[in-house]
Each structure stands twice: as structure tokens, then as C-alpha cells.
Image 1 (spheres, rainbow, N blue to C red):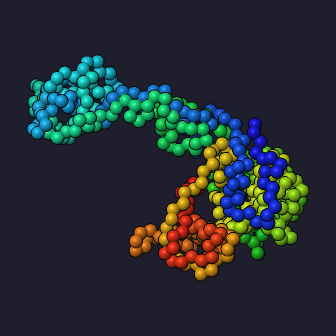
Image 2: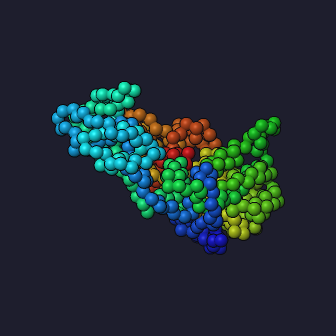
Image 3: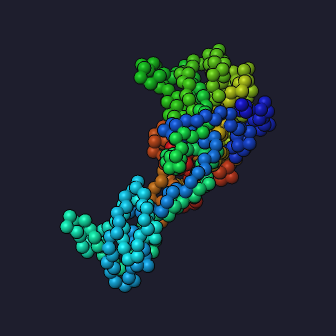
Length: 426
């Protein structure tokens, strides 16, 4: 199995890394560590493809009708007047048709049924009129209106997929539509990468489990439910290690335990410089610290390292900062480790519906942004308060507004970069 990290993979000599530098480190140094396995189609959604999938045949395999109606030879139709044809055969889906359509005749045909040889056009039944019926009511003649386009309502063989066409590439995250495509060529299983094992815990003496009694000075743990919810949409197995007290021993014991069972450890809190922040000290004793302090807001104290061969992400304790750092860095890292191709979320340039009089240079900021109608179209507005502990801002937001390092202000109407949450899996 390919290992996750080299001993020097995140080493740097800067106090704070810029956002783009962190992404470059992740993109260049992380690689897939998951193993291929076959799973049933019903379990493949959201997984990462480990092998390509090619179509062994045309889809559809034969020319067929897209509607219920009448199959005809377009050359038999009058150009400017209605055409009355004899109904020579009836063709239903799932039943072969063994005879060609004769000249000046029509075939009663149903959706998905194979086109008779010679027929090249299907006219919807709603556009046709019965011209004559036999004694038991079976239609014997049909009148076709003028103006029917040649090839109308005819699905051609290979129109959806040609034989040999690639449906799925290795490293592709599988969506429901990909599962449908695989099923359409007869695949009952797909070869995907195994799920990563990800351990998660929070730390802090003040933190209490939701649903328990809250002591004086305490706060409920929002970060762990936040992170496990974010992880639930990824191809991972979650190992929930709960809440740790603020002691170095508790931190070291938890990290040692997680290192033996997990591919990745994600913590929240304890990554700053305070006396009660034990993550960095514990990481230095047990493994290697490769990244700490990023020039972004929110999320500056994020840490990254390794214990043995297990990757560690130490996220900030404030929920907004933990959320932003997870989406920007942890999510793409997990997908890369799990075999997915590296991809960046798309940005959309929108006029700002807000202004910032003064911004610190050399720091990239990610604001909670809402889409709002403006006089000339959609605009990006920011949440009115910037505190990184305000979960309300995350609930109100449609995405992140990205303000680059070189910017020192933002004027109303100025074009800003907007990243919809949908681009990051939400």
C-alpha cells in the first residue's frame, strides 16, 4: 500500500503559509492510500472509482422509438398535406420485430420498442388521427399530419453511449447518474477505493456533550457533530473519540490510540499557543509537525502533521473556523487520500453588496456570503458579523466570499469571488 506522507512532506521555513501554498503542499504531497474493492451498485454512490468503466456495447443497442406513436418511412409522407397509411404491424418494447416496414405503411409502435427495418421516423400518437378500424376496433389506417421532420422521435443505436466509450474514469467520485450509466451497460458491481478510517475528537474542559447538563462556564460541543456531519457525505468510516479534557496526557493517549486504528485524525481546539492548548506539544512528542499557522481568516491556528503514518489535522476551536478549514483543506485532502482526483471548487465573480473600508494585507479572508438580488442581477452579500464562533452566519450563508491577500478594501459593486457551498459538497 502507498503510504500517506514522507517524513519531510510538509516542512517549511515560514511562520505563516499563504492559502495557495497550503493547497500546493496538499496537492503535490498527498496520494491515494486506499485499496480497490468491488461493491454492489447500490453501495457505490459517493465512492471513488478505482478503475475505468467502458461500454461493451452501444446504448441503446438498437434504434428505438422515443414515444408512443407510429413508425413510418419519411419518404412515404406528403410534404404539404396529410398522409393516410395502412397500419401493417404492432411493435412493443421487449419484443423483436422480424419483418421490415413495407412501402406506404405504418407500424403502431410504443416507447422503447425497436424500429422496424426501413422505418426512420416516429410520429406521436397525439398528432395522428385514426382513419379506419376493423370490426373489433383495431386501427387499420392512420392519418399523419404534414410537416413531420425526418428522424423525429427516433433514438439511434449508440446515441447515449457508443461501444468502447468511457463512462467512468479512475479517481472519479461516483454520482447517482454515474450509477445509472453503469447499470445501463449491465454492471452489477463497481471497482472503488475502500473507505478511509477517520478519527474525530474535540478537546476542552469547558466542552459538554449535547444532551447532557451544562455546568457553569461550559459550552456544548458543536464542532464534533459539525465535523462528523461534514464527513458523512464523504467515503470514510468515522471513529468518534468524544471529548478530551485539557491535559497533555489525555491528548497524547488519544492521539496514540487513534494512530493505531485510523488513516486520518481530525481534532478541533487545542491548536493555539495557550497554556491549555496541548495538541502541538503532543504532536511534537509523538510525531512531526509540518504545518501550523496559516495566513487566512478564519482559521489561522490550523495544524497539520503526522503520527507514525497517520495524517493529523488540528482544526481551530471556533466552529466557523473549523468549518472553513475543513472545506478548504481537509475535504480535498481526504478525497485525495481516498483515491479521488484533485479538484478545486469553481469560483463565480459577483458584484459585492457590501463594503469593507479596511482589510489587513497579506491575509486571505473567507467571508460567509449570501446571494441576494441586485438592480442588475445576483450580488454577493456578507454576513453582518464576523465572529468565528457565530454558527448563525454559517446557517445564513450560501457560500464563501474569498478576499485575496493583496486586497486592502472592498467597495460596493466591486467584483468578488464567490464559492457556493455546493462546490464543496454541501
